[in-house]
Amino acid sequence: MRIGAGMSVRGKRRRGVPLAAVGLVAVLLAGGCSAESSQNDRGTAAQAPAGAGQDQAAPGQAGAGAPDLRVDQRSIIYTGTMQVQVDDVERAARAAIDTVTAAGGFVGGDQRHSEAADARAELELRVPAAKFTTVVDELAKLGRQQRREVHTQDVTEETIDLDARITSQRARVESARKLLARASSISDLISLENELAKREADLASLEAKKRRLADLTALSTITVTFVGADASTAEKKTEIGFLVGLRGGWQVFLASVTVLLTVLGALLPWLLAIGVPLAILLRMLRRRRRRRMPPAGPAPVVAPPIGPVGGPSPTAPPPVPATRSAP
Image (cartoon, rainbow, N blue to C red):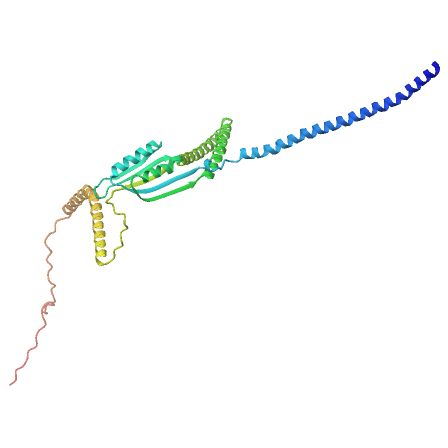
């Protein structure tokens, strides 16, 4: 009984060993497959975010390199002209200046004509571009608006081009300075100094253009003209006819005479300063010439020619033949 039981236990052990080995191999294979799949999944997951990040970064990089051309970021020059008829020109001009000053601008020009019949004030106002429309509307409310013209000029591309050219020119100036510092001969030193001066002048010109554009885009220009209530805004009719031509010709003649008299008045001091001494000098020279000439004596007497003896004088008239009288 013990022998049979031992043999059965040993048989069971022998049978269990192959089964355990097969199970261990299966577990190892399953673990390898799962590890490989997890590594593949990790690699795919690692590659996917990297690709996505590159795809997302590309538009951002492109946007960072390109200029911002939105409407609120563009460089625009605003200019406006308007004419307003008011009851009191001086009061309207003062009100316009107060309006511009309150908006952060200033007066660039002021011309006034204060005659009662034709009072007029022309103001050149510089206001911030953001308040251009508001200031124009406020100026129109000071009286009766007769004319308004608003013009815009987009200089965004010109500004961007100037920025690029300024950056490039600054680099050229720096390179010229480095070469000048390493110059070893006088000829190289002179040529590099001339080149550096030329590049610095070009850079200064570009920077001046950039400042001019920046001033025009930052501050807009409004030219407003205030006229009195008696000012006539009707266009004058063209007149034709004989009297109109005569009046025009007379005005031209008077203008020509005025010009001639003006020229004569400008030349008269020179004529007096130079002409009078010259005339005196010429007169003195003539007197000296007369004194140096010998005095004129009496004219010599010329004797008449004498002819042959007994013969007639060559100057005597020929003899007249005698005539016989009739018996």
